[in-house]
Amino acid sequence: MDIEHLKTWMGRTEEASDLVTPRLIASYAATFAPHLAPCPAGDAPLALHWCLAPPIAPMAALGADGHPAKGDFLPPVPLPRRMWAGGSIATMAPLREGDLVTRRSRISNVTAKEGRTGPLCFVAIDHELSTPRGLALRERHDIVYREASSLPAAPAAAAEPQPAELSWTVEAGPVLLFRYSALTFNGHRIHYDLPYVTREEGYAGLVVHGPIQATLMLNIAAVLTGRSTLKLDYRGVSPLIAGAAFVVKARRQEDGTIRTWTEGADGRLRMEGTARAL
Image (cartoon, rainbow, N blue to C red; front, top):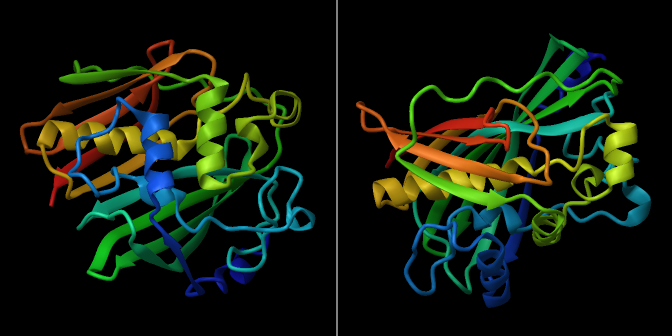
């Protein structure tokens, strides 16, 4: 892996736009309800932005994992496995039904590390989403690439030691994963192709999308704060496998922030984050 060559992608930009349609809002709400923060009529629920302007590639341009091939906007990282590692979201203003939303993206960092299964490459992308009223959301999206490995996934971290103030139990069945993949035009086979994900990537089952968990964490924090303008910093800790219910939890902390996390059916940590009102 020539990390210096991959770093030349830093600073690259792209722009994409999409409409917030009534059908998108209704489909999104039907997929996540009742686990969404209340919002005024005409406003889009929090985290719907991940359904807007997804990369659209023809079938011939997809890799073996179902993702668009690398080397255009994203650097051509020569590692076959790609995962959502975490990021940061700051919601300054709502998206509304009928809005034309423009997303401006910039690759801000490319780094290499050594992991348990071999080399890792992290790519950070900064996004700004604007409506006709101005800037609505800032986001940093962290992607991790790794080698193909026959090693079993690392055991999940121990559960959060402190009790939750609010908990949501969410059924993580294949229909939830299918609906979210459809909403986001996500062809990654780890979310729907059981033979592929178990035989080729070595997971115990279908993998719940990282942004599904982050969506729920942002919304549960909004319920606790009573605010829709929030900043959430979050990171994936261990893959969440579908097939059983998982739990989204949150509690207020002494410094005024919200600690939020997800736990698998075994009660162990899968994603964690900290939110604060803006």
